[in-house]
Image (cartoon, rainbow, N blue to C red):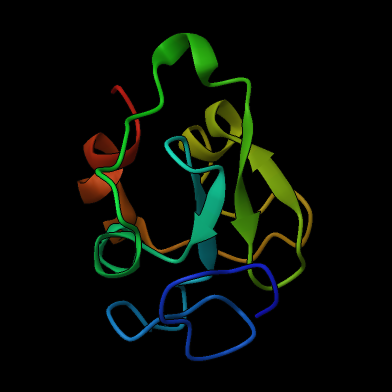
Length: 104
């Protein structure tokens, strides 16, 4: 997918690490302002450590729905289980990794 770095395997932002039907988000990493499908893709490609988005930055648009292209704020993404635009469900298991990306 154009603009998504790392190891995406399809146009809906699934990657070699996470590729279930609901793995359809890419996250803009604070440290490099670059979208990756997951933290593992960032770790493998980036030449720097990742940074965590702080609570006061949750208004930032940083979550891309790989299905429709809608970009969510972090706050909106954390409060939903599906895309605000196309209503496609996000992977519920992603919540287990929120602390990797966000100060939660």
